[in-house]
Amino acid sequence: MSGSAKRSIRAGLRWTSLRLRLLVVFALVALTAAVSASGIAYWLNREAVLTRTQDAALGDFRREMQNRAASLPLEPTADDLRGAAEQMASSGPGYHVLLIGSHDGKPVVGYSDIDAFTKQDVPASLQQQVDKKQPLTSGNAYEYHLFWQRTNIGGTPYLVAGTKIIGGGPAGYMLKSLDQERQDLNSLAWSLGIATALALVGSALLAQAAATTVLRPVQRLGDAARKLGEGKLDTRLVVSGTDELADLSRTFNRTASSLEKKVADMSAREESSRRFVADMSHELRTPLTAITAVAEVLEDEADSLDPMIAPAVHLVVSETRRLNDLVENLMEVTRFDAGTARLVLDTVDVADQVTACIDARAWLDAVDLDAERGIMVRLDPRRLDVILANLIGNALKHGGSPVRVAVRTDDDELVVEVRDHGPGIPEDVLPHVFDRFYKASASRPRSEGSGLGLSIAVENAHIHGGDITAFNSPDGDGAVFVLRLPRDAERLAGAAGDEDNGRDGKDGAT
Image (cartoon, rainbow, N blue to C red; front, top):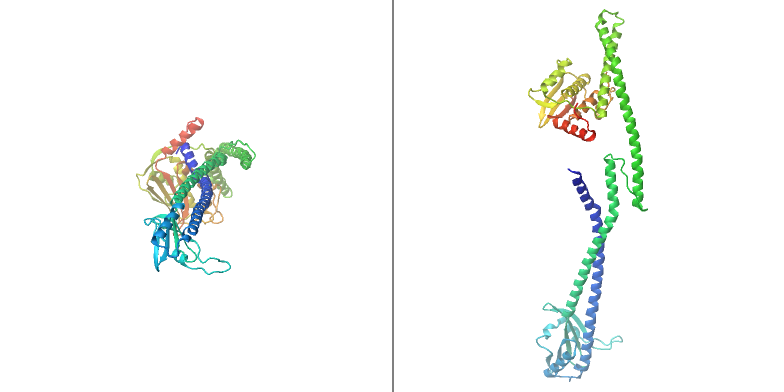
């Protein structure tokens, strides 16, 4: 994946985390505030509009009842009631009137508009309240009161009110339409809704601006930390301002400087150590070659030497060979540490390679080989021989015979399994078996090795793009080492060579 694509993904992840959460918080706060303010404003305006209209209509209806309905005879006719109702409706602020009286013991009704307002439109509960005579007390000087109620008729809101003339006069009812007020309140609701939406958009824009202002320094700090983690230790931030983010940037710069200095010191010491080991190993090879030659001559003449001297000669020969192996191992480790180890690839038959490794070391009688011929792989034969020699040799030293070596393929991988029949590897030792110079002498027979064999084996596996794992047999019969290598290491070697060429212009093949 390209660097720009990774940066886009990281930017998207950042947006969906901090930026989005900041936008959501701003939007929720703005929405809550806007909805609350709009709701309160709508409720206050609604009550004000309805109360104003209601008070005006009820006040006018009360006056008309006092002036016109009260002047009617005690037993008015239907015409008297209708005339009074029409006069009251025509002088009132757009309401209809219904008057109910009694003539010759029979109820009579007068309508201002029989098509718009009849007795059926008056709620029964309101009629009961209007007709009910109130007891006279010190706090109540009138037998009848004006009652009102808001109702809905045919989907239209109305105000219905009623009262009765004291002293035996007619009862009057008023019907006032509130449709205009509803339309005004709907317009107000739309206006408040639009204002709420605009407030929400404005809060989102403010949140975006705030998020950009806050998150841009955080983003720069994250990019700088990422570069620092990638090994670019000279990464620094441009600091401006005196706020908390500026202090954080200064702290980052101080930390990066300290880290760069410490890494430089450690690299210098490590390079010096590698150079010392490489130089020492190289300088030891010449005298070791001469000592080895003399030791081999002494070994050939050991049988003719004094029996008291022969053991010493054999000890010198074995220790000389051990020292020679140690020097070779140290030089190999140095090449791995310096990054100069390279693959020399060839196509080989794995069965032939394993057989040759075992035969060269006279292990044929101690190794049980399970490998079919014809498994062709492309790898470095010398390094494969080193891996096999270390794994099989380790199994023979620390495990029990026979050592079983099984070769198989798994998709595009070569799998070599080395199993011994010894006591196994203690659980506390298992994580360290591939560490350099690590010996588990307390739990296994004393080893005469250097403690570098398995670490060199795993390094050779890694350079092929493979790995080695170690575990104890599930049935408790010995330890198992599993080597996994790609069947074709050509692509890995080519990629490593291209990387080296791009970095320092040197040829990656050796």
